[in-house]
Image (tube, rainbow, N blue to C red; front, side, top):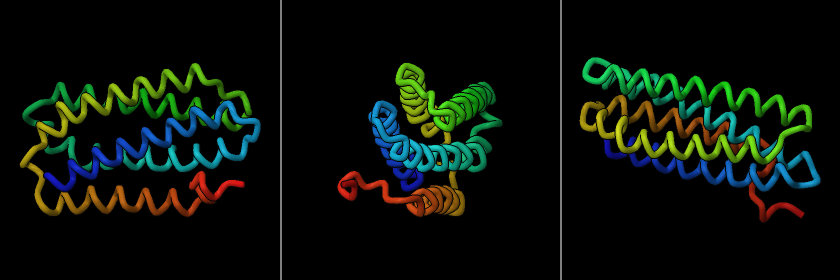
Length: 156
């Protein structure tokens, strides 16, 4: 699972960068940048969770059901938090403290996944599973980049 693990870790880094941008955008006078960054983050984060649940968790479920349950519980909390934040963004009332809390939780979750889930899945992932993970994350990136330009250099 070396390639898949590397891609999942890279995806964590890219999601973290989007979270940092969102944290900056929440204080910007223009709501447009916030909404653009949010759309990319939400899409990629949901696909990332989906890839882990579909391809990684079944690999460790029999040997470590408690770890799988913890991951599912944290994913449910993440989905709930991003749904709430999405509504706040739509209503133009998103605030940095809530976003900072989400960032803190997501960073801790990513660290735990790397140390526990990705290690447990280890060599259990077949080439087909690795390929499926890579394709799911690649499609999430393609989908997110179809949004208006997310490149800060392209901004006026």
